[in-house]
Image (tube, rainbow, N blue to C red; front, top):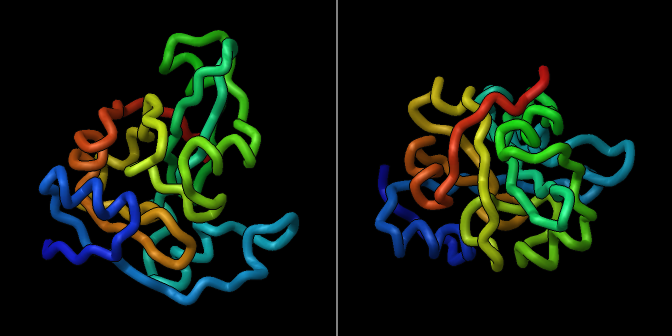
Length: 167
């Protein structure tokens, strides 16, 4: 894949790591993402014509004691918080407050990328990512997705695979 940088923290981190990726812009609908207004990930999958099982969303979670963990799951499923907690050796996990997610990643909800976050967090990617040659995830802003190999996502985030999705 050819590299094309859009200048987001995610693409800049990929460029520094010399990881191949492609960016896929789409027109984001500002009514998407609020309560009752659909999913940012589903919007991206539909706009780009990508199978929702191959489009991954980034969710920031919090463990007891305050440690934040980045979870990356397909938009076709839902994060299983118990499975995530088990994967990282914690008793439980909860979704992080959106304001905390934005502050610690430096990105807005709906545009949070697992790559290039302001503060690096432990990352867990659902095992289903390994089923694809490439997957899609946010490039760090609404309306822009990255396409890259799942192994490269693990490499750049220091992440690990675990079965953390509920369909």
